[in-house]
Image (cartoon, helix red, strand yellow):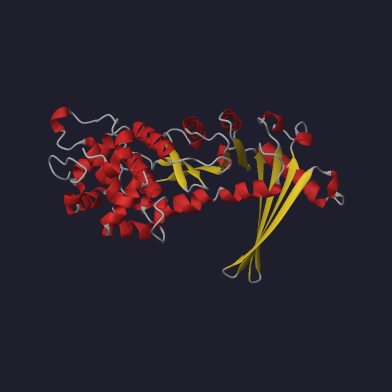
Length: 380
């Protein structure tokens, strides 16, 4: 096989175990994987569209793939990816990311789960799958993912994903479901910092933080508190949004706040108040966080805002540009493996610097221009 544009893909995905019996191997496993990746980059969202892409681009693909029996059928794509071990495929993805991309130290690594809605199979009694992903906000990069076991939840999947990630020196942010002492311990052991959202699933901690910040904000002499504060104002699209971040040093309250001393290397208690004004309507939202970072309102506010990158730049893009929620891959490993392929395509498209426009525009350009598709593949 010619190395060329798929050298890194072959290096990291060529070691996958082929789930097929020998006499049924009409197509090489790496050929199947590379065609699927190229097709998804170019706008294909299901097995039929992947087959059509391969048939239209067979001469081009033949430059660096063997294709001993032409292009696989959509049924073949579906069968191969349903049987291909999902955990092994995810491990190859993470190895590939770590090999070809350098994660910037000190940046936010946001971890959150997303349901692939149409992966539900009522006939077989199978619920829709959840995938927990790690997103490097500054690098605009999916670092890895982990499927949530059907009889479990994100609380078990998050530490499993963290164990596989290289996050030393980064700031790991997780929503309230990940606000668990065991998860904080894993982050600290991985030599990273944490910022965790506190909600009613930690009732004592939530109630006590709300009480202390209420006391602080009503105090006539707030300077007696060990604290920091930042306020930002944003005007856009007819709305005015004010964000205020108050941070208290954790050390004076470790004994008085229930359970606070159980959190490893805890240094900061955070209250974020967001007020949005549209015309005469005013909405206000108050949220609480804990962190291993020192009490620095500017840095902590930036990390909290950075967490939303996983929603806006990953989950939203997967739904809008890749139509993930409507994908009907359901059998066995197929839905989680197709999610990994979308993550591969997204990483490549994000890191191709020459084209302007959003991900959907880049997918179209890759479909229309084979030279541009080669540049996208070269980002691997």
